[in-house]
Structure formats: C-alpha cells, structure tokens
Length: 523
Ligand SMILES: Nc1nc2c(c(=O)[nH]1)N[C@H]1C(S)=C(S)[C@@H](COP(=O)(O)O)O[C@H]1N2
Ligand SMILES: [Mo]
Image (cartoon, rainbow, N blue to C red; front, side, top):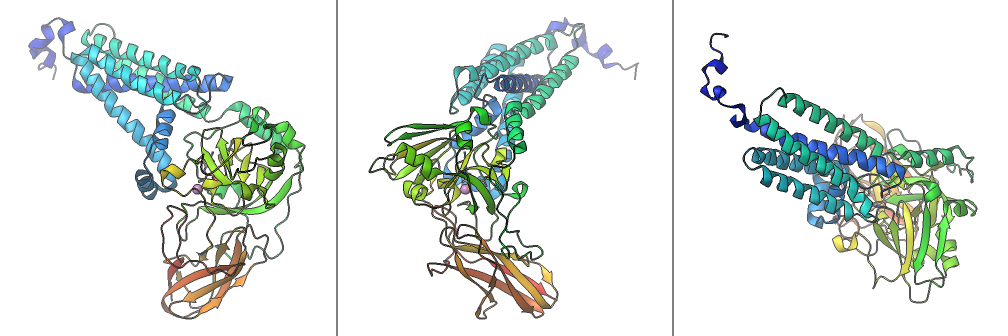
C-alpha cells in the first residue's frame, strides 16, 4: 500500500495546489452546507427576533416559503396532497421544500467549481426567494427580512470561501471546514425551529390562564349522553385527541396579554376588545361538535367539546351592524380568513368567542387565546382560530380563504352518521354484538338513527341522551350476529324530519354525502 501511494504516482499532485480540481461530491457538499448555514442561521435569528418581539414571528424562510406555497396551491393539488398524505400534508410539503432546496444548493456548489460568480448569483437569488416569501406573509414588516438576509450573507461567504480554499489545499482542511459548517448550520436550524415554534411569552401567558380558577364551572356531561360502548368515540373528545385542521405551518403562539380583536366594516362604530375586557364578560358554556368540510363519509375530522366563551352576538351588538350586511369576515393572526353568515352569529345560537376547550385554555393548535365556534357550520366558514378581526360585510363584497379555492361560500353542516364499532374489516364472535357510533346534525339535532344489516330492514338504534342540538349524539344497536360476512350501514334523521343523503358525493365543494358502510366477519 505504501509502495503504491497514489500521490507518488499521480503527476497532478506535483502541480501547484491551486489548480487541483475539487471533486464534484465535495463541491456539492459545499453548496449543501452553504444552504444549511443559511437556513439554520436565518431560522435561529428569526426565532430570537420573534422572541424579542421584533418580527411577526413568521420570519423563518423555510416555513414562509411553505406557507406562501400553500396559499398559492391550486385546489386539485391540495386535494391530491391531502389524499396522499392526509393531515400530514404540511409535513410532506416541508420535506418537499427542503429536498428541492438541497438539490439546488448541491447544483450551485458544483457550479461554483468552475463559475464562482454565477454560483454566488444563483445562491443570492435563492435567498431572494426566501426574503420575498417572508415579506409576503400577512402582518410581515421589513424587519422580517433581516434573518433571511443575514443567513444568505453567511451562506454566500461560506460558498465563496469554501470553494477557494478547497482549491488551495493548504494547512486549512476543507473537510474540517465542511463538518464545522454543517454542525453550526444544523444546530442553528434545530434550535431555531424549536425556539421559533414555542414563544416563551405565549407559553407563559397560557400557563398563567391555566392556573386561574376557571371563570365558568365546567358543565358536566349530561347523564346518559355517553353510552361508553368499548371502542366507540367518547362523547367529549379530549383536547389531545381532537382533530386539527388549518393552513398554519408554524402554529401561531399569541400572547393573551397582547391579543386584541377589532370589529370593523359595516358597523355603526368600530369596537376593540382585549383579553382583559373579555375576562369581564359573562361566559357561556356549550357542547358544540366541530366538523371539517373535508371529512369523508366515516372520517374522523369531527369532534365534540365543551366550549367556554362570550356570545359573539353581544360583541356585534356593541358595534351595531348596518342594514344590508349579511356576512362577517373573520381574520386570524396568520392571515387566514373565513366568511360567516351574520345571521348565524346573531340569531341567538351559542356562537361563541371561545376561550376554553374542555375546561382548559384553548390549546395553541386550537386557537389560543380566542377562536370562534359557531354551531351548525363547517369549520372553514366559521371556526376561525387565533381570531383578530371581525369585519361586518357582505357575501357580494368579500370572500373567505377557501372560497376562491373551490369550496362554497356557505357551509351548513350536513346530517351525517358514523359507525365506530365494529371497525370495518374486523372479525367478531357470533352472538350479541354492539354496533355503535355517532350521528350529527348540528343546530337541527338528531331525531333518529337506523342501521341496516346486509339487505335487511332499517332498524332503529338506541340513542344516547341528547346533550344539545349542537352536539353529536351517540347511538348503539344490539345486533344478533350470525356467522359469515356482513355489511352494516347507518343513516340518521334530523329533528326537522329530513333523512341523511344516501347519494355518494365527495367533500368538495360543500361537504361529503353518502352512508357509512362497514363490512365485518362473524365467526
Ligand atoms: N386561523 C385558522 N383558523 C381555522 C382554520 C385555518 O386554517 N386557520 N381552519 C378551519 C377549519 S377548515 C376547521 S375544520 C377548523 C378546525 O378546528 P380545529 O383544528 O380546532 O379542530 O378550524 C378552522 N379555523
Ligand atoms: Mo375544515
């Protein structure tokens, strides 16, 4: 081995070191590390500035690019992403953005071998895309550009320096520089990501509220509302199990002490409400079942909780909506909007400015400090989380976030029912089997649930006690299961007498229709 040292045999090695070609993989690695440094440092700086209150809290470039992408995603692509990745669609997008960025950085690194200026310009353009994305976020200020500009500068410096010294193999070790750059970039990204997602002040404000004695006593689950059939969904879904749907790449973490809500638009007088003022209002408590319009027949994007809040009709009454207004455009701190019929917020139903979910301050993921809960309407037209503005307006003048993206302007929840047990594909022993699930027809109420086995007659299920017409209702049927394969179907009737639609329709544009059907084996 020592006698055949490649260095000894390689005539190139005897040339001046400055002309030694950098292997392509090393050049690509330099590009990658330059990218990692940029992303890492800008994420960390964004987190620190966000913490100090200097930026909007959305200044990290990867998250901003992903958010900007989400806002511009055509409906067909969004549907494709949801069907491929489910509620992991946002994670998949982040991974996609990182992969694309990594490939571009590697290519730029290879380019830097022969054309350093062109490579630096390309890298600068990438940084520019990041800055543009950051500045396109709602509520962004010029200060939000600072982290990405600084990060890009660090990346450019590393890229130019790395290539030069890789060519000039001196005492300086390029491999060591690569490792060092990767370590600094990687740890900055790691710390920045977690710091950025967890604003200490917001956490402290939520914990302080959690320690306050609850302003309203938690209403108990009415006797008989929870049938407690093993395996069935509980009447009240615990916060940690509650479905979550939103467009937020980074969950907004607002500080309750800094939160305020403005009522604007077609009103006699604009009104502002802050957290302290809200604490003095009489709080109501209500069981309300939220449902996502994207929920498929039999899906789990639906959940019931007890919400504590101030009726939003009282706030709107203070502002005095003008004649002709028919919609309230709700805006979230992250720029998301939804349009709710003014009538649904003023007609006396439990439309709440909710501050608690199942007795706890709202979890950050579910809208801390304040969100809307409007019984009877799908979340995409009613349940604004992290709400900061209510603009009284008209459906003719304004549209919510999802409407130009292929979803309806209005979204009353359709009467639906679901079989929770037995699960589809399960094998159950012959004899008495509890078939159980939930049915919902928010703000109309459930009158009846029926189950059909194979092609048999529709048999009424036993309904749990009714907690409220705004919440779902459990049901159970004792089925005398005989050996073989069986199909179970469920349908519900609401208190207006209308039967659930049996015609299969997809979620878009205004909610799925069809009967939930499961197939089970009986031994
Ligand atoms: N700020 C904000 N609020 C939002 C959304 C959103 O994307 N951003 N999504 C809505 C949708 S589509 C639904 S179904 C409900 C879900 O509420 P949850 O995540 O608390 O279950 O929130 C609504 N509120
Ligand atoms: Mo939704």
